[in-house]
Image (cartoon, rainbow, N blue to C red; front, side, top):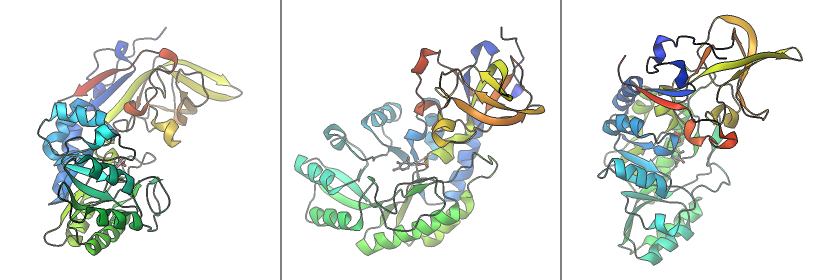
Length: 364
Ligand SMILES: *Cc1c(COP(=O)(O)O)cnc(C)c1O
C-alpha cells in the first residue's frame, strides 16, 4: 500500500497524493519567464511553436507575449483558432495535405517546389515564406533539420525554382524566407546561423525573415539557461532598417514551467542494483526515453544511487538512472523540465494505465 506522504509545499496545487501521478504547471513561473524573454527581444517578433506543448492553459499565458503562433498541422491550427480567433498564425511542416494547404493563415511556410506547384494550381490566396535548408556547418546541435540532406525545407536550387514560379503571381505572394536549421544551440551559435540566413535572404531581395526556434535547453544542468539578452542584442545588431525578424521557439519557452510528480510503488535490489518503481512512467513523460537522458528531478536526502523506472513492461521505461538519493515506498518524486515535448509526445495508451491529473498553479 502507498502511504500518505504529505506533498511538499511547492506542489501545493495538489490536494492529496491520490492525485498522483500528476502534471503540475507553474503558470506564475511561465509568465515571469515570458516577460523576461519578451523584454530581451526588442522589435523581434515572437511566435510560439505550438507543438512543444499545446495545453490551452499555457497558451492563454503565452498569448499576451507572442505576436503569433507557429502550427505544424491542421489539428494545431484548429486548436489555436478556437482559442484565439483573430491571432496571427504561421502554418509549417513537411507533407501538408490539400486541406492544410488551402487553410486561411497569416503565413504559409512552403517546404518544397512540389508543394508550391499544388498551391498555385489550387488558385488559393496565400502569403508565403520559403523554408530554406542552407548548407552551413551546424555544430553542437541536439537535432539538425538543416546543413545537409534532410526532408525539411529546400536547398538554394529548390528556393530558386520557387522564386521563378512566383514571378508574376498575385494570388500567392512571396513574403520572405523561413529557416529552422537546428535545435539545442546557444545564443552565439544561433546568431552565426542567423547571419548566414540573413545574408542569404538579402541576396534574394526579401525583408521578412523567420529564423526558427531551437534555443538551447540543458537537461543536464537546468540552471544553464539560454541567454535571451545577448541573443536579442545580437539580432538587433544584425537587423537592417526595414527588415522584419521573427523567431518561433517552443521548448525554451515552456519546458521549465512543467513538473511531473509521482510516487514510489516499490523499491528493490536486482543483481546488486537499486531500483525504485514509480506510478506512471515514460508513457506519461516520454522525454527521457526519446532524448536518452536522465530527467532532472528535485533531489531528496542523499543516498545510494537508485534507478527510477515506471510501470511499463519494457526496459526502456527509465525516467532517471542512478539518482543519488534515498527513496522509499510512498515517497513523492518530482521530475522537473516537463513543460515541453513531455505529456503531448507520450504514448499514453500503452498498457492502459490511468492518465495523470493536471494542475495549474496561478499563485504562489
Ligand atoms: C519544432 C519547431 C520549432 C520549435 O523548436 P524548439 O526546439 O522547440 O524551439 C520551430 N520551428 C519549426 C519549423 C519546428 O519544426
